[in-house]
Structures are given as C-alpha cells and as structure tokens.
Length: 80
Image (tube, rainbow, N blue to C red; front, side, top):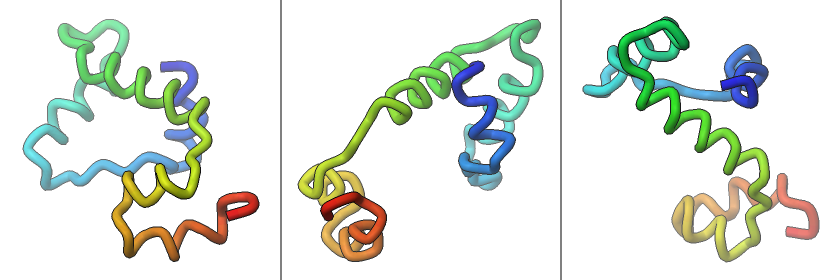
C-alpha cells in the first residue's frame, strides 16, 4: 500500500464510483489494515508495484490502449 500512497494523494488513480465494485473497494482501502477484507487492497498494491516498474514500448501501448490511443500517448513516451 505504501507504494501507492503518493499516487493516491496526487490523484493519479481513478475509481468509477458507478462500478459495481467501487463501494467495496473504497471501504477496503479506507479501512486497511484493520478492515475485515483486504483482497482488493492487495490487488491494487500489486498493480501499483507493476506500474511503477513498467516502461511501455510503442507496441505495448498499442496493445494496452488500442490503436486510437497511440497518438494520444506517444508524445509522453521518450523517443516515441
């Protein structure tokens, strides 16, 4: 959870509050570590670790975001 704390404070994560899992997720992250459940916190912290170490290539960006998104993100990728 520590790796994601600064990202949450910077508003770098987005939760669609209309999503069916949003209420449970918000409860788990706001009651961690003393809450009854923490599976969503575990998944979020693992995703934060992976994202912190991930440097996408142009091909990976195309696969993650689809062909239309490549033009939007290429300017932020060094040598993209």
